[in-house]
Amino acid sequence: MNAKNTKKAINPPAGPNPVQQLFAADQQQALLDQLYQFIELEHLYESAIREVKTKLEILDSEFKAKYDYNPIHHIEDRLKSPQSILEKLQRKGMPFSCNAARATLNDIAGVRVICNYIEDIYTVAELLTSQDDVTLIKRKDYIKDPKPNGYRSLHLVIQTPVYLSDSKELVNVEVQIRTIAMDFWASLEHELKYKTNHDVSADLAEQLKDCAETIAATDKRMQEIYRTLKQID
Image (tube, rainbow, N blue to C red; front, side, top):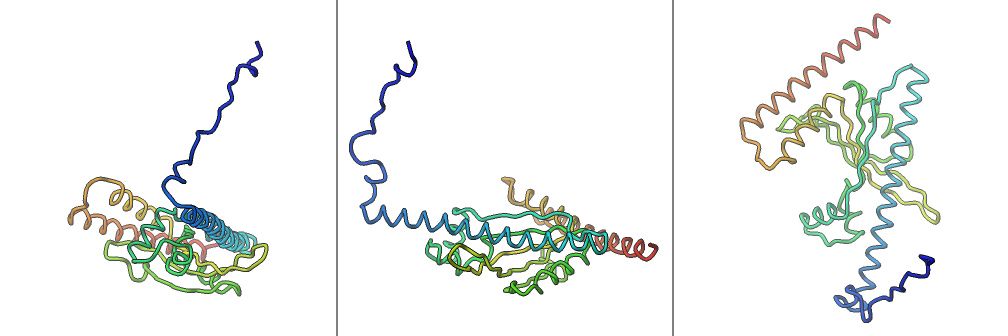
């Protein structure tokens, strides 16, 4: 017997679906509108990430062509989830909407640039923010002024244009620039502090800060070694 002929037709259940049961027609439409808006928002910020990454990759490849050196070790990116956006808006006492998210949050789109040496961080930051279509919105230098826990990184919020089919949108992107060593410490500190079920005691917090200081000193030594080798060449 042909298996095709043995299949039974599946009819949709009679009556309204669960969404229709829970919400009135106008509420259903409002929910759908908000869903579509967040899909568009996600696309917009993903596009902004691609714009910024392309700029950085071009700068890095230019350095390789001109100076036979890559100041960027690698690039990572991150897009905040709707749940994270909701939680952050709630903490700020803002409504959950695309307009509120765009107006209030600077870190929906994030790009992390991992450099070899401390000097590379400032070189990359200067070259990126000096481009004609990039506007520097905010700058926090946690390398010159580390956080109390020892965290080091250069944080920028930049605005970059995204060209769509019928408009140009200016989108904020958070760019974190740090060395390999800084990233190593930050990644493990995050794991220890936020991914475990135990609070970090004052003693352990001090040990983590001591590690950050040791890594920072190593960063500076590696920078000096690199400078010395360049002079020999």
